[in-house]
Image (tube, rainbow over all chains, first blue to last red; front, top):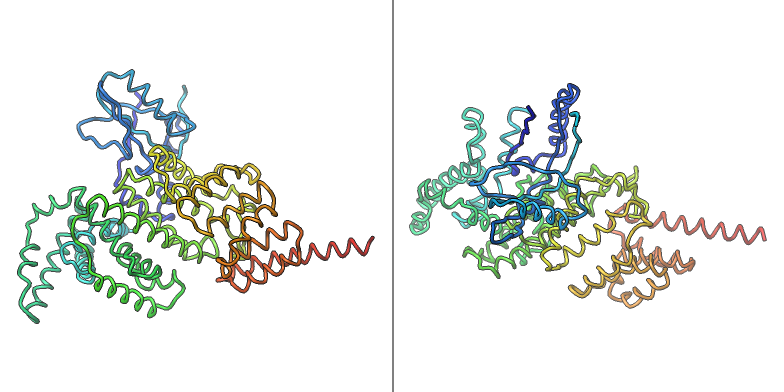
Length: 124
Length: 424
């Protein structure tokens, strides 16, 4: 079984880590990742840029709107994610628009640039 | 991380929100500050036992408010009649507190706190010092160190700033849209001042002044989280990130300045540029250009060029022209001259800056750039005059030594020429 593991932390706090603190956390996390990576168990790893870099595309059958900032609707649950290589935010928004057109449910696509991306060590 | 690091971090993170709310209750900077200090002391005692509260800011506001009220009560008993209308307003219950902490309220609290420190009655140096003390919670000693002044002098500067703010009176009404955007603009300027103070005082990537740059970025991000749809705040954040991304490449081993063209671009911090470029992308979609967005766009064009030769000087020239239209200033024209020199050569750039000579007569960078352009044009003797003038106007050792290096090159070029003549 493949599992996705999502990290939730208070950005107010993590944003206040000093460079040394942040480096230390990253090193400690990398050690855990290495253990599972070496065992051939780890898929792609990503660190997202702060929520200030986020844009959200909200769509319903009747309209689609683009909002600055992260997705913040507690009624909705995270059901999946994509990693896509786009030249600009506009291109990423086009991708999200196409997805939303193909998806009849009302919901949101949060577009968040990646700060760090390590590809999968899992066999395809 | 040590055991109490999480408490320090929680206190730092909660500070702007808690101080903002306490300032709203007490309407006085000193009282709010003391109340916050008291709450922090109690947190340091209580949290190691009880663990972190669910909402540290709410905890600090509640505890700080109660201790502040006690103090106000005690003082008023000692002095005049108690200001009843003030106290009754303060005696709200905790349930009410939760209500007051909803998003929009604390957003305006923090903006207010920042705005108090950005009050235009304060000179720039006092704005920066006050913000670092009140909003960021740096100690007077830390601020003094970053400013390279003595602690007593800094203490005095902050006290003066507080007195001025109190004398000017603090507006406590909830701002309307126009007020809010005016406050945002003032706060953006203050944050930029904090950054520039750090940026210009730096003499190496690990200099204490770098802390000021990081603090400014933290404040910019904080403000952007509160006002996520303000394109100018996106622009400001992007600009600071881009300038700071080059901090490791800006200095040589001796603390000398390395110009943009000569910097090792592999030292530019990639995560910061990535974040900044994402922010500019977001800002552009609003189609409301402003000075910070344009400056960020210019910095982004440098960040996008992996080698100096790949820089899009044409676009940079256009962006500077747009900036000149928005806020005409000889300094912007001076910056544009660099782009013009890259595209059309030094003589074209010299013609552009010639009319600025009078206005920028005592501006270090004017003479520095003029010297460099003259040198490039082969007008050695005039270049020397300009460089001499620049050295006389330099405000720090790094600036002066950079110009001295230019002069050395100039000498070398001249000597080479003389040698060539002799050979002939």
